[in-house]
Amino acid sequence: MHKLVSHNKILDLSIRTKSANKLNEISLKSSIRKVCTLTGRSRGLIKKYKCSRIKFKFYAQEGLLAGVQKSSW
Image (tube, rainbow, N blue to C red):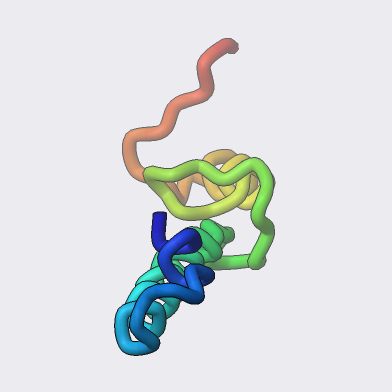
């Protein structure tokens, strides 16, 4: 809807400007990506620990993550 309002030449310039600014805010919010806090990797992210699966596996094997157990022995 904001895109339609901001491109409508019939409306007042102040209304179109407000709508364009709102559209810009929405697009900036959606461009934020979740990445690993340790490596910056964007794929294979484990939400709870905020790290990639590779670093998660490494720290779990070293016993540095509390409450993590190997699933099969």
